[in-house]
Image (cartoon, rainbow, N blue to C red; front, side, top):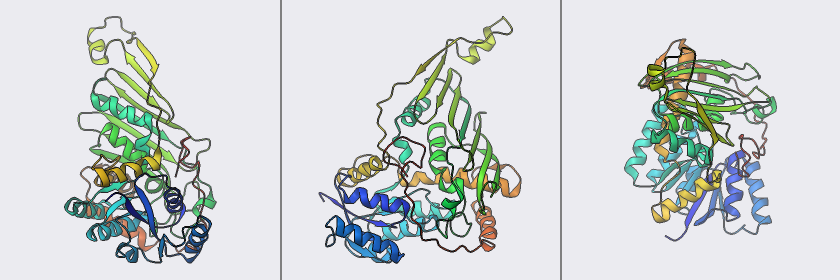
Length: 397
């Protein structure tokens, strides 16, 4: 194989962006050959786009994802449909012998994602997830520094991530949005899969979660748009995670405190505070009472690269063609989702949740909310995603 024929499942907000990037040849080694979407309006949009770009005879269109998967016209699929459909479509595509790139989140509940991961590991196919924020140079550098251990053990992690502001019109744009039956959650399932993935990728998984999720605090929606959570890690470190889609202007401040200092990141730059004497040593040896270790603050130099979605897809293509590494293997999607599920369950039951998560209990509680989820009319609106994900990169969600 010298080129990957890829099909996109879903031509909505994210899918349409992927379609145009692929059609414009922005992903080396990858060619768009098929698209599927159930909405006639999206297929009409696609037909106009194909005509405009003179691709009318090169890209097949389908009303059903399954028809595309079994068409023989693709080697891989990119799944960009509502969250509940991610695991079943991934499983179907893998079983059909296709490579899979899945948009975040991996799914709504970990039990389905665990099944998906089992199929992926047996399939022999490349399975990746669209955690494009892992391509951001500052987060890559944080991961490198923290995981190296050069600044010592983690003591505390704090992430205030509220620059996810969304207006009511955003939630009204689709029938599936902001409902338990259609989306399966709010800010934790839609915006924060990136942050929860980065949090665990950089700092590791917590072992204990206590959270407060507020449903419809700032919008007319039935799912959470405001969250405050506290976590504990094996070894004694603690963490706080705060997010909202109702804050404007919002804040992005991610701190990791370690024995030898701390890192502070706003998504655009990374500051490093190095203690002259590591805190555990200082507290045992200092005799002056009120003093504290001296430190040096520097802005960390990075490679400056932040290729986002195109970077993830380029690595996906290279993995299929040449066996190169992925930005984010698909099986890792369960980690951030585990934290998200634990936050929901903690708030629903008003108690601390121990990990590993009781997946059956979570699904039982989710089904209670699905059962009373309200019906929404589909506005049929496709929104531009440019500039919506808190980064100055040109390629955004």
